[in-house]
Structure formats: C-alpha cells, structure tokens
Length: 258
Image (cartoon, rainbow, N blue to C red; front, side, top):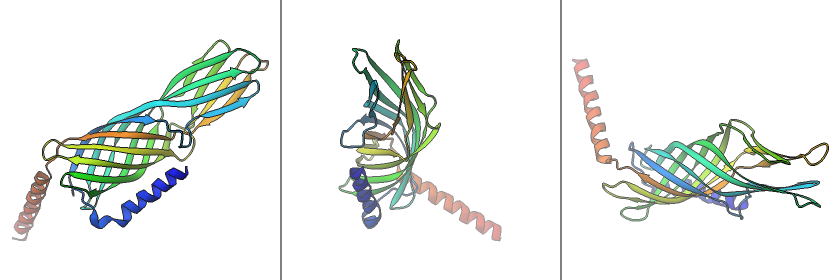
C-alpha cells in the first residue's frame, strides 16, 4: 500500500507541476484496442488470503489474468486528454484447503470475470519527435455479473460479489510512440485499487457436525502491463473540419444580420 501511495504522489506531481511541458492533441478523438496481462506481485497487498478455522486452513492465491477491450481518447485542450472505454477483465485464483490431522485436501481453480468502464485524465510530455511519456489517474466502474461456486465431496466454495458494481481507483504510467500514418503504439503499466473488498469467499467443510464454515474477503487489487494500439487519426483533418464549421457559423450570422 505504501508503494501505491508513493506512486500516486508522483503521478499527481507529474500531472500538476509540469503542465507547461505537455502536449496533447486538442479536439482529436482516437480509438484503440488494448491487452493488459494481470501480474500478481508479492510486494503489493495480496489479492487473496490464508485463513484458519479449526480444523480447516484455506489459502486463496491470485494467478495470472488478463484484461482486453477498447479505448477512446479525446483531446480536451493542448495540455490534457480524457480517456475511457470498456474492458473485460478475467482474474484467476487458486484455492487450497487442508484439514488438520487428516490427509484430506481440496484444490480448485476458478475464474472471476467482470466488465470495467474506466474514466481517466491524461497528461503528456514529449521526449522526442515521436516519443511521449504520459501519466493518468482516475476511476473505473466494475460490473460483476455473477457469483462463483465450486463443489467437492467434502467441500463447498462460493465467492459472493458484494455488489453488482464496484468503483476502483486507477493510476497509469507509460510511453507512447506516435507515427505519422500508422497510429500510436503504447507500452505502460497500471495499478487498480478498489475502495472496498470486491467479494467474500465462503468455504464449507462437511466432515464435521455441524459443518465447519470459513469466510474471508477478496480485495481485487491488481497490477497490469499495458499494451495498446491507437488507430491513426489525422489531427489536421480535425482542424480543417473545425475551420469549415466556424466559417459556416460566421456566414450564417452574416446572412441573419442582412
């Protein structure tokens, strides 16, 4: 969590202390696609748990996942752009349950799928003729379609979504290579931090009477490697269209006066 706070402080400083060096494409809308492998890093707060309720011990660990979707970017002014889109995120988990003083174990892998709509503010710094570094921050709205269940002869697992929608805090840093006619190529990293737990996992062991139940939460935070491609959009064409529209309004005003 401390690493994320430091990253967020650096991101805010990047956004607000260097606006004179920034360059965004005003009024230009670009559309792209992205693929983001989810990387479970141990130095972050782990998205899992290791909990004991006698006689069972359950360990839930995140595995590699992925996020795929489309991105829409709109230049607001010469300094900033806003970015949104829609992604399908797939998180993978590995569950391991043991029973003390027995050889009974339970292993299960399950996938948690949600849909994400991010809204972020971006700022760019030009490093070269075609190379830019950008940083962004914002929020995402995550939609969870269902709960997850797995069964075994002696065990039952169900992961409940706390709500069908959950907000996350987003932070991003990356590099962008802009070509003249072949679009933009982007490589970066993002961190997603939920405000509250994403889900609650329930594990039942039927070998005792009454059955033993264990509960623990899943946070849902993750780090991604971001790979993006934005299709080419000619900023000069947008400028020419704006000039034509402005001339039409001026001509219409002149005709109205006469």
